[in-house]
Length: 248
Ligand code: UDP
Image (cartoon, rainbow, N blue to C red; front, side):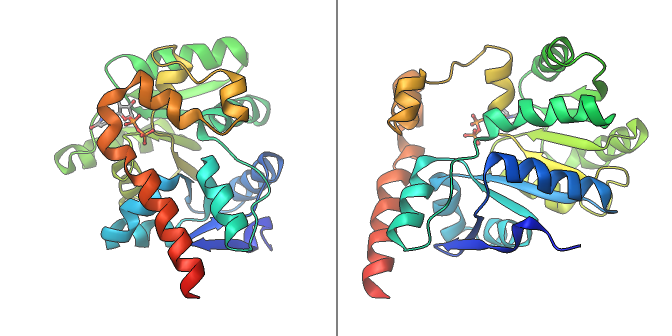
């Protein structure tokens, strides 16, 4: 079957798929109908900059089945490079859409990662919103390789169909790639970053007007100022994209 995901836009070596939120849900339906685990990544400028130095992470993103544009910076880069992307597909919104689809389709959802108790609480929020949703499991664990085998066994025993991994990038995406073969029942796994913290109200998303202005990153910087060093990736990203375009 030909996926809707065939068109991807290379942004500094990271393929970002030109899909809308609606396309994404249609692609996930296709993934779920096929055997094997399909990996989805929610790419933002921090991912792209980390992938410049981390070849392992870059490879993980290149072999993922779907890389979504999670961040206005990617949309601007796509436009600047002459290969526009249709819209943002934020992981923090996708986690709701996928949970709703899972409830409708009877897919079993497993929530892995985040701080103590967060995955359980997020599972309860989703079940309240989408009655009938089957939660295969929820477990914080850690991306530490020492825990890998036990976590994979736990997920396999739960017969999960969909897996959210909230270990932050790049650990979550590497974790999924590393366990692609070992996870026997999961057909779609997605790294969701801090999305479960938003779902449980531990972190607040930017107000809509700021989101519309493309300033969600500014809200995050003000709320979580300790991120400033990581967020230097943003101006570095803009600079690299401008230079890449001028050179070509
Ligand atoms: N996290 C975790 N274990 C770790 C590191 C991080 O469970 O060893 C969780 C953390 O609690 C948070 C999530 O990973 O819920 C992602 O955090 P962050 O917001 O930094 O990720 P980003 O959205 O920036 O990728």
